[in-house]
Length: 449
Image 1: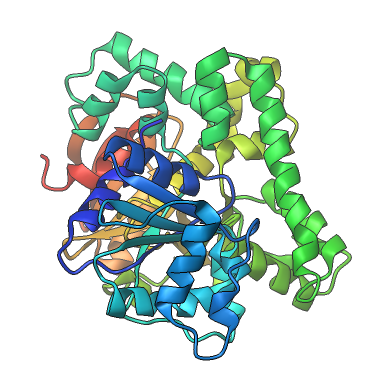
Image 2: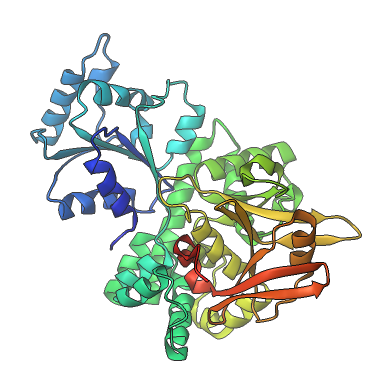
């Protein structure tokens, strides 16, 4: 179960000026497993403290000392702490004071490698009154396994390397077809590590669905923890109903007709903070950086994982396999969900997940660009399409109005180099086709002709 984030973890560990590392991500995306596998691969001794299971008392005493905390950890874990150790504080949100105390590891014991993680950490960081150790910690953001990680896990590492190296023009028609079949399988299975691991071991899609449903129940089991902030019944309802409105401009009453807008907004914000939902914000795109033109009142939502979407929708594999290409190319929601969860982390695990799009919602002239990304002083428009047609009114509206002419169409077709598409003597776009399964290649594609 190799993860690309292992490379970032290794770079962090080798830094001369290393700060405690906080791994952020939703439940079940593999934060703890990532740390354990890293320690195993690097022959490091893991000293793991799960704050859900054990409570550290020393930091709550007056005038506590770091040495006392370390002595308590050594007693609890029955392990010595030395230069070849990694101290792993898991589920750290259970004791917010410990988050503030991370600064003392950096200031008083910088030689000790410290990693912290927590499934509801973003909620704690937003709501807690504990002072955050700004400038004393680093972050690593982790999501579900990507398609390339799924390929590696399922013994298609060479194929993953070809995709990631942007060696797409050399893919034969038969290899392209193989990639599409694996893409279809991933779209059903998703990238939750426990689900992928079980599928690789058993090849059982029945067990895949059972584990997906267990994960959904795990999320729902967390809902009572939020009861001070939101109505738990409303939260449970919106958790599932939001998955039926993916890739749509958020309209509260579509998601829940019975609850007041204020309550719906609070629930959606909570699910976003928990990284269960991925917001994609409208940008004016009139200038760079993109973030400077965001309008957070206009957004569409995507889910954490495409496999969990299928589980919530109760789509069994026999129906999925029979109807996949129809569902993908007519509604397009599965394709956009796949793209969204990969684009969220396209900048790498050191950057927080972020999605942007462009919407014109005028009565007389409507238009939408599915996704926008920024690279090297240029904004790229990404369109998720089923066919090979280069015609799209939204693209030309966008190019003419904003002055950004580079377009990437994500389709089921093979890769094609950028070509100039002319709508009129004054309006054109430079358009390239990229297979949907190769979305991760964008991180290495810049500068390719």
